Amino acid sequence: MCLVVSTFFVCKKTPANVVKQNQTHSRLYSRVNLRVHVTLISPRKRNIKKRSAGLSKMAFTAVWNYSVPLSVITLLSLVGTACCQAVQAENVTVLEGGTAQISCRLQNYDGSIVVIQNPRRQTLFFNGTRALKDDRFQMVLFTPRLVRITLTNVSVSDEGGYFCQLYTDDTHHQVATLSVSVPPDTPTVEVRQEAMEGGEVELTCLSPRSKPPATLRWIRDRREIPGVVSQQENGKTVSVSSTIRLPVERKDNGAAVSCEASHPALGGQKRVRHYRLDVYFAPTVRIIPPPGILREGDSLSLTCSITGNPLPRDVQWTRINDTLPERAEISGPTLQVARLSQSHNGTYLCQAQNNYGRAADHYTLLVYDPGAVIETHSAVPYAVIGGVLALLVFTIICVLIITIWCSVRQKGSYLTHEASGLDEHGEVQEAFLNGNDASQGKKEYLL
Image (cartoon, one colour):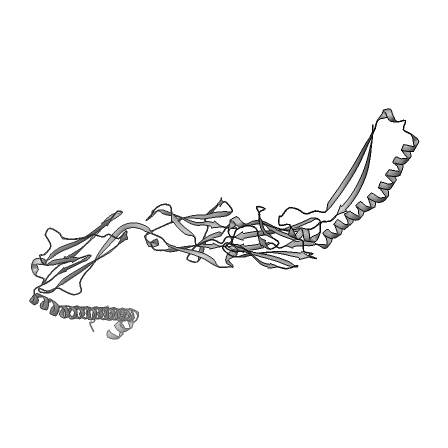
């Protein structure tokens, strides 16, 4: 079986006024009518007359001479139109909550239909006319060279590709990619467990939402503390956390640490969260004594200085082996007693406690009568003078002893040298005393 196909091309272009009146966004194309004539030749009828064969040959020649050149011309016309008219789109990056401008640039625009669609392929504008009821989108410019729309209060859900489409004999489109950047808010600091004196504290800095992920740094005393960083995706945004562990003592209570969040959208600025360490420890108690000596009739005021975390709320004042005086008044950490007497003598105790320990301090009160106080005050200068005189006498005695010892030592040395001289000239002196009589015996003379 043989198949003979004859093809006819008829090109018809839709008028421009008809295109403009069409308010739908379906594709508009040039209509091309293709006529196909199929002739089936059965093998049984191969004995066709020569005249019929000649007519078929003439028909094929006519189709080849007229239809093929017309098809080539139509194809070149479509290509030329595509090259002459074009659309360009620009990518946009905007902060969340800001305003994005989506622009479509046109080349050699001839009044064809321009359609702008969102990433879900919903038509936003059809030749400048709103097609989607979303007041955030506004057409701000529609010219033969530039079409521009704005999107206010941008969110991450608006991110994606926006289509700029130009409907001519062929459809031209470009995609403008909208990227939404989400800067981080000020991070928060969480404490996993209570910090006790001699233990460790675990701190976590959390930035719950950013795009791209924020960078977190711990700072203490202008030095960075390395932390363990983790990330978790929440749709199109990312949650970032950084955890550190610090050994703590009582002196670290109230120490400042900071967590800094940096992000490209912040332009070099940082979001900082300051935190002060809260270290729990047992209390300490110290009684501040009054100055001077107390006499009968004076007033007593004792203040109990307390430290601790948490700070003890209740302070207990007691007197050892006795009760507090009737005129004693307690105001917080202060004990006051008016018009003292010797009956108020004794040891006063201040006590405080919290959940982590207990502490106490004591003060011994001794009240003097006025006469005893005066004698005591007058005896003080004489005691000082007596001590100075005793020191002076002791110094003089030491100097005399050293002087005498040096003198005795020098005199003994002189007698020794004199005795040595007598031994050397003994015979001469002895001969002189005996009248140079060597035969006489030696005699001793006491000079």
